[in-house]
Amino acid sequence: MSLVSAVQVRCPSCNTPFTAQMHRAIDATKEPRLKELLIQGRFNLAQCPQCGVQSALSAPFIYHDASKSLFYCFMPMNMGGSAIQQQQQIGQLTNQFVSSLPPEERKGYMLQPKLYLTMQSLIDDILAADGITKEHIEAIKQRAALLQDIAQSQSVEELERKVKESQDKIDDLFFQTLDDYIAQAQEENDLETAQGLSALRDEISLLTRPEGEIAQQAKQLAAEREEMLDKVINERDQERLRTLVSEGRPLMDYSFFLALADRIETAQASGNEIEARRLTKLRDTVLAMIDEQDEAARQSLMQAAEFLRTVIREQNPEQYLRENADRIDDAFFAVLNANIIEAQRRKDENAMKALAAIGTVAASILEEKAPPEVRLLNRVMRAEPEQRRALLQEERALLDDRFVALVEQMISQLPEENADLAGELRQLRDMAIDVRAQG
Image (cartoon, rainbow, N blue to C red):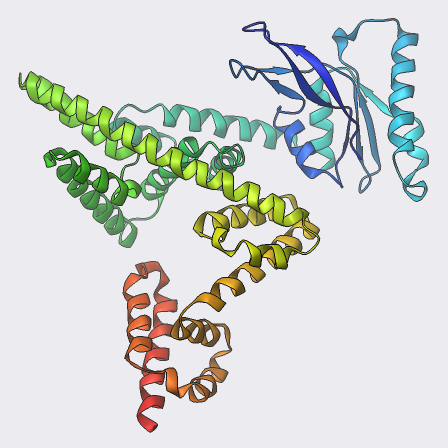
């Protein structure tokens, strides 16, 4: 169990006083998130509410991992005091932590915590206990530095050159590091950074995967992006432009704005300053519209996150979900899925089960409100393939043109990589037509 206290802090940047939360202990098996924050260098960070600057809170704390019988104590070198006073602090902190545990969890190894004077030495030993070597840590640092360098590319050509020069280091560890940054941005509700990094990931993935089909997909994506850029540049009506930005948002990524910057440079190079200024103003307008739409999406996600937290705290989650069924939307499921993925990453089985149960209930509530043909399609697709014909025969009255049209609509909306699911849906459509014909 963590020991938490409120401390008074003065911002080192703007000198604003504020109250921050400080943890005096980490129980890694019960609170894996605190362990992750420690390893990431983000443990006990206080953020100024005035200017946003983050500063580290320097204080001793206990680190405990019952699964490995680890019991460490971090004592910052800048704490001062005599050796006797420091030992008294360690003893007091140890007693507080041990006393917070149930009697059956108190172990003999807790009587003599291993002392650390630097944060890095503590983190190195924690990672070593997890089987992560210093070489692996160094490799992660190299991938993070490479990622930062690639992300600073100012043109498509520079991005392609950097990726090509670093092919040997753009491996599974590189993408894992990138995914960690994306997950971190999502957890902090930094939607803009998460989307930017996701778009960068897609670009790097396309540049490093084998030629052939993937190259063709990249070519198609580039063509769609170029077409969207032309539409945006040629649109003079602000409302229609806003609609274009909303519809084309997935294409308006890192490469989109690099291509727009190339158009601006071309206009300047040809001496067409009027067009260059127009395109520059257009870029600012599109960015403002994207910011506005992203902010609306961020607010929606924040509201969904608060709703999910309330659902989790409720004694009867299903009843609360039914009473607030109008709040079960795409944003809610996006937040729910993000939390499930995070729980899987932390290997938190209890959280995974609780969140999955909430998802099941929420989906069933939505399904109850769905049209009959949608409910039937969901039931059939959840059933085993050998049971589907029997289900369709039971609900023969629903196998009308609307049902067949629904299946065909789903097939048409599936991307190429979901060929297997599209095949299942085609079989289901043919089966429904056959059952209906048998009357």
